[in-house]
Amino acid sequence: MLKMGRAMQSRNWTIGESVVVKPGVTDPDTGRDIGGWQARISAILDEAEILTLQWDSLTLKSIPLAHLAWCEEEGLSWSEMNLSPEEVEPVAARDTVDDVAAALKELESQTSWLYLGGEQGQRIHAIVNQAKSHDEFAVFRAWHAYLEQHLVFPFAATVEEYQRGPVRQGARVTVLAITFLDDTYGTIVTVKHKNGVNELPLCDLKATGADAETQKLVEDYAVWFANR
Image (cartoon, rainbow, N blue to C red; front, side):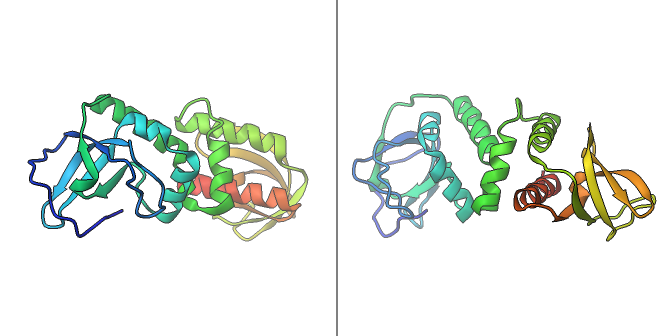
């Protein structure tokens, strides 16, 4: 997010200095009015006559989720921006660096799956955010509860990953029910196949003969599990 071609003001800017964006300044990528947004200078690029700004915690918390999602999908940073010196002015800090770190941690946990883009990223994001905390097993439990509520059994599936035991990769199975939650392999399901009945991790399956919602949910879960 750069704005170029303006002369550096005759002022000695310093790293860590608090600034506020002047009225009427807009985000160069979206055209959104960002006048009044406050930040700290995190870098000074003399050759380009540009200041890199890291938004303060109050500004970060005010950014709409839709904008955060758009930035994630586009691969743009939502926590900082490059502006010319003429577009900002000094201001008293209204928070601490620790406040910024805490806000970043919270927002990153809320937006961690939006980078996938589109509806799938939003679906995964919504389920992950149902977890009571951000540790992995809490997210496992959130997924497990959601799967129990929304999967429709039985459905046909293909084993996508290597397996030990009688059920091999590429085998076609019928998924009968959710069995339990494992702290390593996640949600375990009971499957029926030509050699009998076994238990497999749901993340290793691809729903093939199922309603559209079940197919999407199984795929979303597998994508989350592989990228968690």
